[in-house]
Image (tube, rainbow, N blue to C red; front, side, top):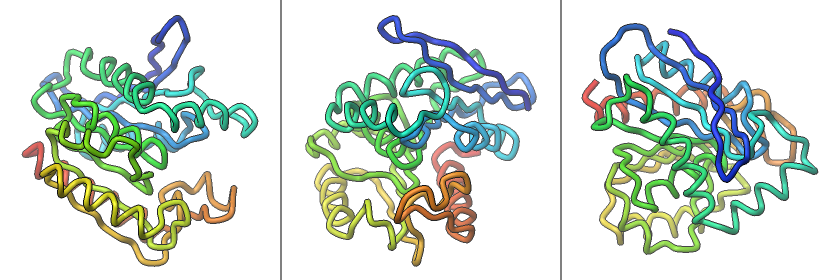
Length: 237
């Protein structure tokens, strides 16, 4: 496995993502990785490398804020708020990352996934709601709410979301609304709930950074296994 940064531009703004390439030369399932709200960090990069190293997938950790780095709160919140309020912009940033992934010569366009953490999970879902050619979508402690729930009818792939029952940012009523959204749209979907897990339960680097944000090793481990099984089911590998 080898990995490297990739620079790309959206409307003349520089973005820097991270591509992880498994060993070999054959076409491989391709997975887009969407980072948490503060920006592209070692958390998302390491998950892309694990996808390549452990599962043999081509993986690209996109950058949806620009600059390819984690931002201080005073810079992050205006950028994140803009995306939260604009589904089309969110989908555009996701699609730009997907284009970088699929441009790689080893990307198999018949086996494409998107996964994300926190708002990155929301972004992965929005990519599907926008009708992108994604066959498997996974969200870890991802925001589930949508201002345009009818757009779920555009999702052509299967969906898995992994949510902590102690997550204050994703209350039970949001989970219930998501269930109705997916069911009404006829999506093949799953939701796994992890007892005692709070927000950002996969990210040791974020542990305790804000109230309600806490790393939870059992849920991190179990959700990765659930993701691997889900991708294996969809990709046949």
